[in-house]
Structures are given as structure tokens and as C-alpha cells.
Image 1 (cartoon, helix red, strand yellow):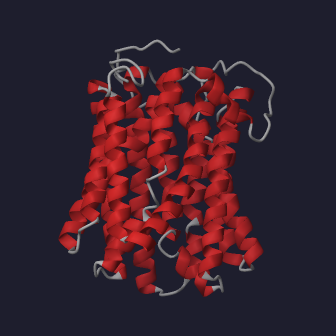
Image 2: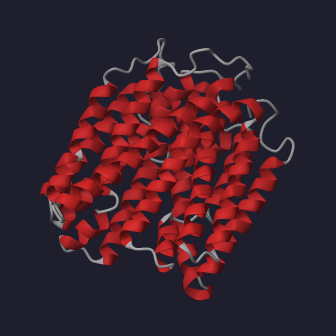
Image 3: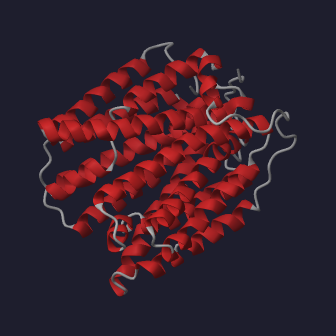
Length: 402
């Protein structure tokens, strides 16, 4: 178990952290340039709604499970950087492939390649971030990275909207343009310097689902924390349901995209400050508070009917994301041993992806049977219960930065 230090280094945001954050910014810019128009483009080349759903489900499942596999492989090999470089390269290469390959089987291949790249890099990158700092500064480091990543999520849709205003329906060129920030991300990965000495060399390649065994051998605090987070994830459906609610409340397509951009702006602005606060008052408090913001958002969504109220709710939702997504990884990295960091984070991401798939299916069923208000209120109730559980003394780690 790592020793908890209260010392925060003066230069907590090191050179490697800056570069990794810029890489994430460029990659998210490329991905989010395409996110708003991906369903429209797929329909344009002949995909049915059912086929789009199968494509996205396969892609996200690939990303989730591969995070566990490649994270465990990173720990086994004692290396981080090769997984980071390969993962960002695969995601970048998938962008022009989507522009020139329009047959369904090739589109499936390109989209899956993008998600495989995300799976290959994510856990190793988070372990690199963890290795760059001390336990007392994990919140600000992961918060800074999430802020930079989300700036890319703001710039990408804005650039896409501007381009499509001038060149409507010119999707092929937009996919090719998205390759530019992807190339910048690849270039930046070669500026990263992995700390020496590397982790101890062990058996280089694990079995496909060998990371699942980590659960049995992980610290009790990890199982309690991740178990609670996975229960919440089972009721945390896709953000598409929030956008669907905004659309059903009378927002135009452009306004729905603008509220999505607004959410990302709030997320980007709040993630780093909340990371600093988490280092000072404890990750448990900030994370539990974030879940209460989630509950307020979803409870409000059950009854919201006007654009101003929806903008307020998306503001709360941005604060929730800033208080939880980076904090969860920082918290897990403080609980686990250094040589298992990528496995611990990757296993959590893999289990979370399965829960997310089930959550969206559950939310869709509840929405269909009892209406949207029931779906939103159910998620809000589970968030409150999860926050109460995590806030209990001694449930997941000791006081201090935890």
C-alpha cells in the first residue's frame, strides 16, 4: 500500500503531465469534431438506426474491455509509454479511414479501431499521470488532465459547427480535417519521457480477461470503492438521454449542441479547481458532493420544461463530471499499489463499460414503461444512496487526501 504524503510538490504539473494533457486535448478535439455529426453521417451512407446502435454498442464494449486487458499488460510488461503511443496512433488513423471507407464492415472496423486505441492508451496514461506525482497531489493532476481533455471536447464541436455552416453536409472533408489534431497528438507522444527505472519486468502478455482476477487480490478498500461506483454506474445512463430530454423540451438541434458545448465548458473550467480542493479536504468529500450534483441534475430533468432551467441543470451536470471522473482515477491510484495502477484503473473501466451498457438499456426500458420522469428520478435516488455510502467513516480508506 502506498504511503500517504501530505506534501504537495511546488511543480505538481510536470512536463510529462503537460504533454499528456495536450495529447488528450488534441485527441478529444479530433473525436468531438465528429461526435455531433456521426449519427447523421452514418445515416447519410446508408446505416439504419438499428445498425448505428449495434456499431456504438460494439465500439464502446471494445473500449471498455480493452482498457482492462491493456492496463494489465502494461503492469505486466513494466512499460507505459508504448501503450500510450500506440493507442493515440490507432485513434488518429481511424479518422481518415471513416472518410474513405463507406461499406458497413469497414466502418465497423474503423470505429472499433478508434475505440481499441482508447482502450490501449487509457489505463497506461493514467498510470503515467499517477507516477508523476505524490498521493497528496493526485486530485489536481488528474483534474488538470481532465480540464485539458475537456477543452478539446469544447473546441471540436465548435470547429465542426463553423465548418458545416460554410460547407453543409461535407462530411468527408471534415473527417480528413479531424486527422490534423490527431497527428499533433501522435507527435506530442514522442515528447513524453517515461521515468526510469521502469516497473519490474514480468510475463509480457496476459490472457484476454486475466485482469478480472485482480478483483480477488485487490485491496479491500479498492473493492469497496469500485463496488459502490459500479452500483451507481448501473443507473447512470448515457448522456444521450439528457440531450433527448432537452430536445423533447423544445430545443432546436443547434441549441441542443450548444447546451452540450456549455456542459463541456463548465466541466473544463471546474475540473482542475475541484482537483485542488479534493487534495485539501479529501477526495471522498468532493466525490460524494459531485454525486449530489448529479442527483440534483437528474431530479430536475424529471420536471424541466424550459431552456433556462435546462441550461442550469447542465451547469450542475458539468460540476458533477468535474468532481467525479478525474477524482475517481486519482482515488483508485492512491488505494492500489504502484505496480498495479494500470490494472486497477483498467479493470474499473472495463466493469464500468458493462454497467454503462446495462444502465442505458435499463433507462430506456423505464422511460418506455413509466416515462422519462421515472428514469431520471431512479438515477437521482441511487446517486444519493451512493453518496451516503461513500461518506460513511472508514468505508473506503482513511482520512487525508482519500
